[in-house]
Image 1: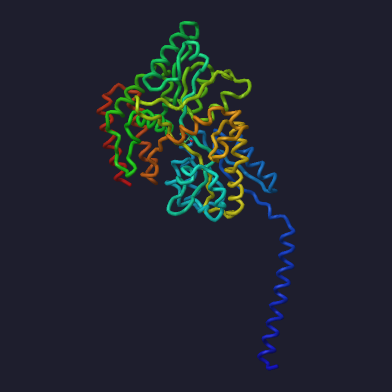
Image 2 (image 1 turned 90 degrees about the vertical axis):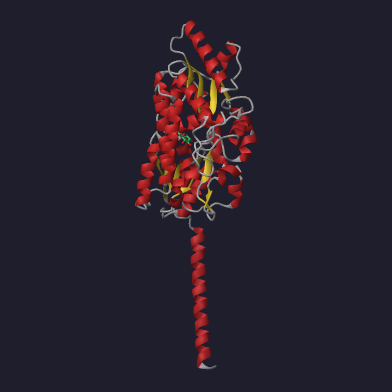
Length: 432
Ligand code: GLC
């Protein structure tokens, strides 16, 4: 044997030892439970309890811990908090609750989930919901629940007055007035016809886009990013909404968000109420005044031939790119967007799933009988122009809702004010 061969043999033996030692280590590692970690996540204020319930269930069954942060009640106020976390590349938060309109704005701070979530799990969701999160060849978030603007109404009162759920916004205006006046005469002086979101914030962008799109007036900007707001359908929709103030809606509606408008409806003092699907859960919860008295429909259309245009408000979960616990955060995300947790949320809170199979699930259908209508409303829903505006969405939406708020609370010439709004929006788009 030459010294070279001897040396080779020695090296081989060294490898063997290392390999064996490595295998022994592996055996031990497999036998030990995976390392427990604490995952920090954001839940939205509106669905905080259910979000916490799901996250804690995962924590218990996986032997990890979850620390939950609550977003501010007004989701707009979460944006600067997130922006601060991103600016400092903070690893303090692993999992983020994300509004659909933030995807384009925040995408650079989210991990690509393609390698973290198995394809079969991604495919269980509506393709349109996951497609919206595929940006720059990445999957930046996973859908958590669908929000589409819906119309809730007092089934008992519509029956009492021999009315159907209104097809058009004009019909809604007339029916709301008739029932409100009838109920006031019958002794309920506090009765109102219509509760919605008129405060100057993102929720008003949703409501106004719904009125305008339902009349064929588009969604502020075209898909290509051209400002399309200045058209007769916008003027007609905003004029009609102005007419609601202090006739079928209290003046206070100009400061209402989702929760305050829901409070009016659930106190029993409003005939119609525009909101997101969760109101089914709250209004039918045991002990509520409106149990068995509520009907739900898609939002009205502008006129025959036009389509219902509920705003699309899907909620997502995303893993922060700055998290030091990517795998574990993705495990929690997978549980929270998965069938089991979405089913629990649908049954307990009326949240509309993004997992398609749940739309034919008997337990879910028993709790939310209008699932087929909600699915159709989701399929017809209109998106706010966040894809076309990307990082600039917030600025565009702010200009829009501030102008809409001024128009519906003022007495100016609506057509002129819409023309002014067009100019401002063009400036915003250019500034991008
Ligand atoms: C809901 C929707 C969201 C929307 C917000 C407006 O949370 O899910 O998309 O931006 O309401 O208030």
